[in-house]
Image (cartoon, rainbow, N blue to C red; front, top):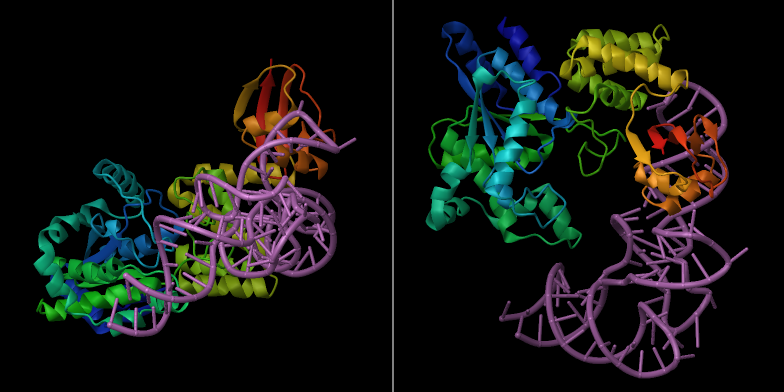
Length: 399
RNA sequence: GGUGGGUUACUCAAGUGGCCAACGAGGGCGGAUUGUAAAUCCGCUGACUACGUCUUCGAAGGUUCGAAUCCUUCACCCACCA
């Protein structure tokens, strides 16, 4: 039983520091039901969760199954600084209302995966604001500049002449201090968080918390391109609130190599099942596309249900295999004689009429499935299905 | 505070008076092929009812027939010195 729990906990992790501690905590839980705390920090700046976040959330959910209580930490104070891993040096200052709004939608999405009854939502503004200048100084004395510069992000930025604000040095310290305040037993985060996570251990020691958190790091999920990490700003993400057909379609568009990565980090299948599947694909018993379809179906089901996921699949096959038009698409009303390029822009299919012209020249634009070549075309009365490329559709009523 | 270097499109990066809407690479988009995979090949990649016009090379002024390029001021970044 304990062994099983540990295997699930270790699954897919990039690195674990102090696994003995985790073993003890889990063992204790099975002996007398004592729970322990698992901390994970979330940035309230981005209200939309994507699959990259769910890797972490799924791991938290695993802990909840085995006696963990999740400390869902909202970094409302630290958000003012911005994690140095983020590229942009300057951050928008969020108002309180923004933060509240973001968090509401954030947690709503998170509870699709987490067990709400075993989750405590905490805000670090609560204790960090009280820390004050004196507290800050004391905190800062725990860290040398040399050590700080060892951190990968900083050394890279320093070497490439990218500015580093002094306040950014405070970020790991403050995050670490959260662990002191919360007396966390375990903290989990992405591999890019290693420095910050370890800081929690160091500070817990310095502040004599009497225990040091174990640290569990999850790999960073690559985005659709398979290279960069999944992030909203790079546009290579799959959002958990996206429509079923979009989630399904996006998963199917990933490369075969990336598919295995997604299987490992996102699928509920056991590791041995995945290994078997991989073998079957390698020996051509199973077509890679089938494997990918199943993955897409599984992920879509997680955020909706089996019925909707199956519908998404059918829709997808109908549109892309049979080249039918989608059953649903955005509709627009336009007035008679509208210029085709303008119509494409108004329908949100093209960013500019210039781009529309180019795409018409390149045979990318269709009206009712027929390719068009006349960029000066005006639409007369009637209903049309406009299409750009393979993926963009809109229904237009001209009257 | 001093000295020097820098700021060009989504990103990196050429361009030091007209041939510049701006080389090249990456990315993105589109076409062919395909399994909306990968790989490959080709095209496009500021806006505008468009063989022309307009806006853009950190910001604002100026010199010039003409400025991304020269001058002035400002802002920001980097390095060295303090």
